Image (cartoon, rainbow, N blue to C red; front, top):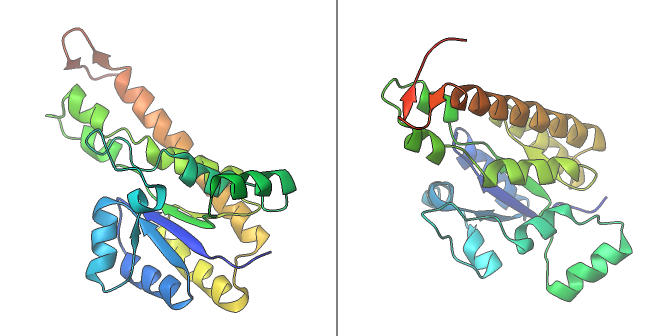
Length: 206
């Protein structure tokens, strides 16, 4: 297994990120990020590359499109041991992303407010985050994916020891991703099923 060289970090819950990013930088890992996460990392004096600089394509549509780009998802999804994948990556200038730390827009917190409108709820349905997480978890053979700050210490310890995480850890973290995205989609579905879309009215009940 090769060493982790590049990480993408995009977080709603930024707890512990300054230390985590600082340790990644100390280990020589390039950090990519977006928006508020990039600002938080920079404010801690850590070098970070904006995803828009990495892809050559700006964030757009009020932030709805940030990471949805082949240079991001190809970088995550390519199988490192697949010669044809590596040929295509070289042909299109894709650089691997080996670690992804992402958590999701706080949909349940948003809709817990009785004054939450349908429009507010819709804007808090994360698209890029689950896509990054699912891509990374699918390719757990090659990519470490983190959704919970509680996993930062183990990941850092393994990278410090060997340059990468173990397959067992990557698989455990991938399962954690699918647990999260499943519950996230369920929460969205349940809430939307209680909406009268014609009148933008939320009604309680099972």
